[in-house]
Length: 430
Ligand SMILES: *Cc1c(COP(=O)(O)O)cnc(C)c1O
Image 1 (cartoon, rainbow, N blue to C red):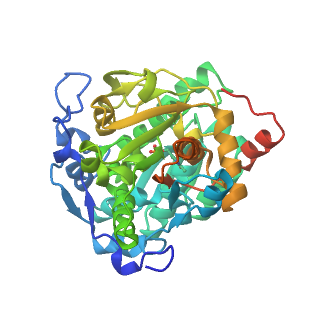
Image 2 (image 1 turned 90 degrees about the vertical axis):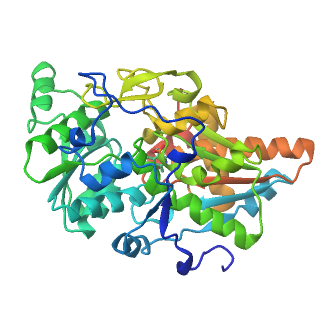
Image 3 (image 1 turned 45 degrees about the horizontal axis):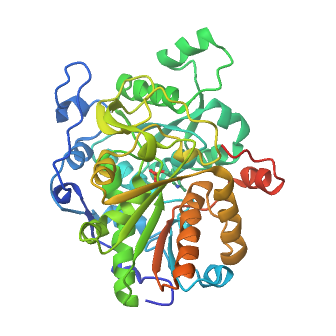
């Protein structure tokens, strides 16, 4: 390994599935009509068989096909960087390292699963994928991936973002995706909402309903989800597996690992390969969420729908209720009412510790990071940085040489409007 970069020969060849290593059996998703566990066949209208098999798999290791590795090599292995300048700024004895997922072409960890999902759909003869996107991070990751595997891609983008945040839409269109402002007249769910409110600004829940409806009603079309589900978290473990290797080569043992949580995929991908160490009490794993959407810290642990309209199977998770609409904070990727079931289970058992933080201290941390390390973090990732800084300052008080790792899930170069508001003191502290 050079100073920061893992040689490409170390790119992991398998994903890690946490399911067999959980402290109790994961409760199955339920069919809301029968309240019975979902059968694989019931998911075939929306997902390809290979992904359904991964969703339900109890195998600990799953091989990554060469065609996926080949695309991963465009930006993987991603760098693992010591934030020495941030350490100096904070005058902390702690050592801070970050894994940087912002080097992928769409600028976040999301293509790690988008590439795998596009590949498995292509293998089964699917011609088009549909999905929803809020600010456009997931939509641009899927557009990037489908374009490489010659699939069509239709993204229902929340209308408010479609109008106010054009840059990610343009990125999606550059990668050949069709971007539709949602609610739209193309689906029954969209038409119903437009009849009642022709100026409806849309929501992620509505966009999911439109994307799922299109997948179910069209030939050779399936739906793709960017977080929460087991197979998504599985694909993301490439992050933590690389970190493991990078730590080995640096002869380093982490004390604390920190990440932000929207649906849980980047945090799980980063931390699950270390879950056994956390169970032994050797590493502290901290999941950071926004106070405006405090799923893990204030949600109820129960079965709930994954979407607003109630079209998805029921998942056992911490939830704020599927009709909860979080305030419009800038970390759009963290505005989700639930979280991945395996992550919720690990939180319930105290193996992963959740913390909620409010918006202004998050942006303070993001700006401090940019001023010391250079990279402008995504507002989502800045949630993790807030707690990294707090932990590094605690270590200063006790004069402990803690090793703190965090996942920098993406860059914030499409989020400049949010930073502008912060810099001109117009940002509300929701
Ligand atoms: C989407 C997104 C998140 C939140 O999603 P998770 O599934 O919780 O990882 C976090 N960071 C960035 C940069 C994102 O784009």
